[in-house]
Length: 436
Image (cartoon, rainbow, N blue to C red; front, side):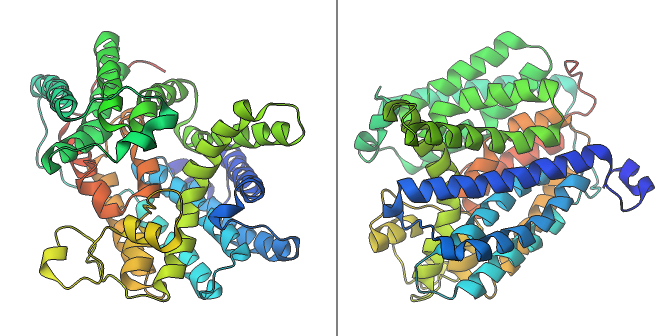
């Protein structure tokens, strides 16, 4: 809690109440979005029934009490990640009320809510950690230069193995044919998710605009190498978050970063349903944002609950480092296992609540790994203490969305989150920042 809030006692200040109201509005809009998705894409087992509506509203309203945590807490990386996962769990609780799968919905719903609480309580905490290593400003400048050079080298190496210019709508036709050594794939993930966003944030927020633009151009070059939506949209997303933090409170930026795209998608869908907008203008955005970006992470928990209520749990054997050391009932990645089981459109990666939670230990014990992951994020909050908060938000802007769709351990290693956290820890404090 902020010092001001602590002095005022348990009451919410005016700005906190406004933020809480905005969060509640976001949850309500998210439920409306899920109704629209159910009307448009029932083939994904997304349903809506009026007789189940009261129970769904009561469930989400009870879970929405957690909004007070975000209204009271100060901004941190844990706040950023926690809010995205909080909205995802709210979406699952809504879908769970209408799901036609045969698993124990009450147990899974309670487990999801408890997992959210277990994660958020430590993740929103900001401990004080000792600083054992801090780079000098000169060493830090050299580090940023090396990050850009490494990023350029990885882009060239990646292009040697795979380079194809195709539209965003055709990437699935060609992406399965991409081949590169495992080490190259790891380097691409680390560079694009952690290193280059960090360099961009540091350059842009100190007014080194030409270097920041160079990093953005370098990030764009990874799209024909990876044929991924994240590589395509990452440069625009980083610049948008940079602009938003210049004018808005950081907590407000986090909330609006999810609320505004969802609201735009709902508006486009309504205009299409009433014949006021052609399908080719409305539905591509609605499918990308409201279905794939917002609904799929929540829907993954529905699929994983259905599958692992009737199949062996992984006991964390899906983690690459542990798989050779233990017997595993699944030789393929979980995303492939779920895809083959349900025949859905594409591999179904999922968040820590579905993988480290449901798939690994089942819904009864799922809050335990969620709690441990929350403690890791609390340590990250301590590691980043003293870093300009805009640098934390902009450089970490790609990770919350990634954590919605990728296991926690994968994000930490394959996507380079652990390296980004180390950079926050060792970077010099008191770096001059462009005035807001």
